[in-house]
Every structure is written in structure tokens, then in C-alpha cells.
Length: 587
Image (cartoon, rainbow, N blue to C red; front, side, top):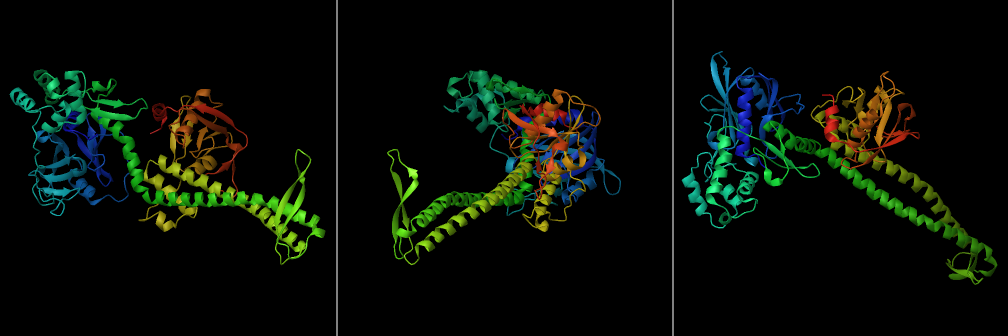
């Protein structure tokens, strides 16, 4: 669902409560459409995230760490110039629109006090971020809008800022009883929720359904089925809370834990909901995973293209090889035909095209023997015909050996590509993606210049995720094959424990003992759960995980990065809990 004006009002109220008087310490632009302001508030350091992208636009404090590019974009450089050290003096939401205006007190190039404004328009695909001076003259804009883009409103540096064109709807914060009841009578037989969203400004369908439910006991009631005065009373109660800044943010999820909806009031019509004190925390929960998936998909598009093409090629090749291997089973029939011709050579003559010979190895229940019909080359002698079949037999026998080797190689390549695909799903930062690109370049799937463009450099040592178990043991988790190889063969010692999901691509997980002695069962379960979560089995209710001592591992000769061989291990069946594992993560 889209961020509506009511929820934006809740975010504005939170910002006014926490961030008024706060100063900007740093300005970042981790994504093309995302700006992060590191602020020092009375409650400590806070990161204010403003996303003006078309997919997941929003404003709010965030606890999610985003990796920043080495070279900041021009918009970020300009914000740093004007807003470094600036103090927040005002947060407003004009006319209940999906717009937040941040006013800052700072100093100009001459050192005189002045004001600057940062205007966040959170309007779906029309979202934007505009930076102006105190008189609202535009100094910079994240996404310029000229005449080729819109004939109604242009947003360009040097122009004076204007609010987006007003919608033909009524502001719910200023609607009185008389106007409301008049509109209800003119509404006809429409569903209440559809009438509310079509008539009033900035109201999401979830809020409209909740208002309907509180009036009629169901969320799909018609206007003719409800008492108009009761409808106004509930409507007025909801938006009186907005005017008084009394918000109760809630988040609704289904039985599988997937988020369904969020709002600035409890959504009682779902039957079950989770109340969360901070609206920013709601947005972090709702958009966190979506943002990560979108970032990986956007930045790894070329990698995914290479991996998917390679997977298609390998699968097609394996299908052909397996078909040829099945045909090699005809080899035994060729040998038998050669043997029969040799055994009956005295009965055959050159020029025969076909012969039916008795197969004494094929005895029927009645004591008779089967007959085998053999096609002969009339140009060859019987002995030469036998040699022809023996050659076919030898060819199929050699092909079977070679095809078996090639199929094993192909299956190994398939497993490797699937492990890269799994690593792309668990990648969290641009550095993770750079390491995957480096890995593919090393493995020969693409040139290094194509895989690591724009002078990007990977770290000297691969990164990894770190956790700490209940018993205090460090657990390292690789998020790609380079990280897997690094933590398994460079960091872990022979007496540490190694974990990996059984018979599936996934992360290497190492539990470091560091002289602490044998871990408890809880520590083993937590480490195995991490291995299950960061694998192709993610989401399965029960997952089998192999674990063994690092000294039992051997690198496969000539194998791809991260591949190991082991023959001695234990197994554990675990049910990973994402929230509990997240709490074990070392920040």
C-alpha cells in the first residue's frame, strides 16, 4: 500500500517530538533516490531517511544501515555544502498533502544566519525531493521536471517552488458535519470505503475500510446501510486524533508472517494486528526487505543475466548428454549381435541383407529360445559385419565413460551456479555484489572489466556476517563463495565447527571456539539455524543441516570457490526463527 497523508502526519509528529532543534552531522545519498541525514538529537544519533523513488517512497527515522558510494552524487554534495551543521526549526505538512517541508537554520557563504528548506513530496511515481532557500527559490532538485515531462508544473533550479496541483477532493481535517452529511446523501449506493477515498484527500483504502468496519461491523457496507451521523462521528474521531497528533501505528501480517497492511490507527477489521509505538519503525519493518530486494535486483541485473544464461546453457547441455547416455545402453545389444554373427558365421554369406539368429541366452518358459533379427551390410563379409557391430559397441562403451565424466562436471557447474544465485539472494551491500562479480570473473563467466565497472574495487579481505550465540560463541556466515572460502579456510581453525544446509546451495557458517571449550546444544542449534536461513531452503519449516569439525573438510581439486568435500559429519533438523537470529547479529 502507498504511504497516505495520515501516516505522513504521524511521521511528522514523531519528527517534531524527537528532532526539533537537532543538527545535521552528515549527509549521505546511498541510492539515486534516497537521502539519509545523520542527526544529533536530544535522544542521541538518529538517521532520517528520505526516499523519493517511485517504488517505495517514504520519510522517517531508520535503523537500517545503507552502504554509501565512494563518490557522492552532485545533489548530495550540494546538500552537504548548505546543510552541514544546520538546525531543524520546523516540520510541516501543508494542506494534508503527502508533502513534508523541513525548515533548517544554517549560515550562508558569508557566515550570516539564513534558512533553507528541504521539501519531500511522497506521491508514488511523482515523488521528488526539492531543496530551496528561505524564499522557496529552488536551489536543487533530485528529479528535475521540465516541459517535456509535465505541462502543468515544472520543478527546476532557479524557479520558485509551487505545491503540486490540488486534487478535487476535500481535506478531512477541515470538513464539518453539515458538509459531510450533505456529501453522504449525494453518495448514492456506493460502498462506504470507495466513497471515502474518492471524496476526501489523503485517505488510504485501509483507513477507509477501518472506518466502515467501526460503523457497520463490516468493511464492505454500502452508504445506504449505515447511519450517516454515526459515520460522521467515527470519521471525525479518527481525524480529530490526527489534528491532536494522537497516533497508534499498527502493522498487520498474515499467518505466514507476510506483511499485509499498515496504518496510523489500529486496523481492527483484520481481527489481528500489531501495535508499534513508532511510525518510523513501522516503515522500517514494511519496507526493509522490499528495499533490499529492489537494491539487489537493480544493482545485480547484469550478474543475474549472466548467471541465468549460464544456468540455461548448462541445463540444456546436461539434458542432451543424459539423452546420449541413455542411447549408450544400446551398446550391449550391438555386442550381442556381433557375438551371434561370429557364432553363426558358417551359415552367413556376403550379400545377405537380413538374418534371424537364435539367441541361446534368451530362454522362454516353454523351453524355446528367442530369435534376434539382424540387419546386415550386403557389401561386407559376415566377419566384417560382426566387426561393424563390435565397433559400435566399443564406441558406445567409450561414450558412456566420457559422458558420465561430462555429466558429473556439468552437475558440479550447475551446483556452483545455483550457489551464486543463492548468494545474490542473500547479498546485503554493494560490496557483497562486487565480491560476487569478482568471483564470476575469476571463474571465467565474464571478463573482469565487464564484471567490475567504473573502477570499483573489492576489499582486500572479503566481508562476512557475524553473530554471537547465547553461549557467547562467535559465528561467522559467508554471503557468497569468496566469503565462504575465506571464513572456512583462512579464519576458522581445525577445531572449530562448520555448518552447511544438506544437499542445497547455501552459506558456509563457522562457529569459532576460541579456547572456550565445547558449546552447549543451544549454541549448535543457533549456528545451524543461521546456516538454514541463509540457504536455498529459506522459508522451509524444517531444514536438515550438516555440521562437522573444520579439519574434516577438504577443498575439491580444481573446484570452484567455496566448494569443499567432507565424509564425516553430524546432522541437525532446525526450524529457523528470523527474528531471533536477527537479535544474534553483531552490528
